[in-house]
Length: 389
Image (cartoon, rainbow, N blue to C red; front, side, top):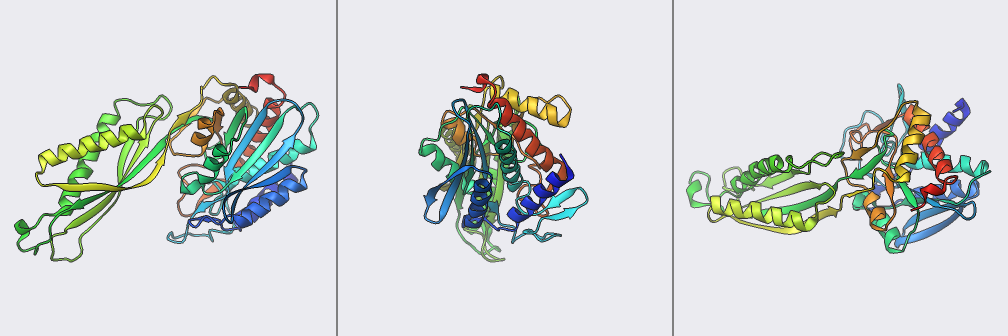
């Protein structure tokens, strides 16, 4: 890529990062206008799709006539940085060595910017292409994928798709799902000088934490070839009101990650079996699970599908090394697209290790390579009938 092209790409990223689009509340209107303006400038047909009042998906289409349809999907929203300590301003794209810091650089505005840049180049050099490339810039991915779920419910169709998430530019063909459940343990308050007169809800919750570690050992016996095993992690635990009182209530959040083939109904059964074991071990234990926090399904694409091959070829061309398909350990919008019958891969600049954390960054070289990889995949799919479903 020329220096001018790289500078323009970094400037576009800076523009996008400067538009806060935090979920919650999910206000990505400024980013939506920015996407619409850029896509319109390079000749895409742009429509808005209302997900809820004031929150629109942006759909930008380049039509080259009869042929396969390739869908590019990335989200406009980001997680809130306000509770984190940053070394650089989160909504200013700040160069630090060979990295660009800022909220969304990795998750996932870097992917969004690179996808738009790739479409702009394709629009300018369309000879030999047949089919359509459709960008869906979606809202509320960080709230469980509400924008892409709406796309699927409205009947989005494509022969293949790429979801932009931070994979370090590897081609992921599978990802984990989530099952987050709130558990409330009920005890009985008493003076801490006479704890036998009460029941310690924190102690009951702690017993569940230990049981979750044993459950992880069981899950580790059946790993997915690309994702490893499903996991269970207690991510929140709160209990107690006063320093000298036996806590009457404890609330925890259990985060279960699913691999393809596992279901939420299965997780319900597993959780109930764990609680029944605890009830037998701790007579009088009282617990309920009043709230599902997040449920997303795992998904995968056949690793032999043409879209996987196209992605691997593109990575090889751009990065100069043979690539192999991998798994993506987080949940993402791929599941909604696969559920709509669209074979999908995940690929984007940046690392999942940087997503959601303070001082999030993307390597500048990866951002540049991402645009080249997306352009290569678009060209490959729209010149090969084998990319059809």
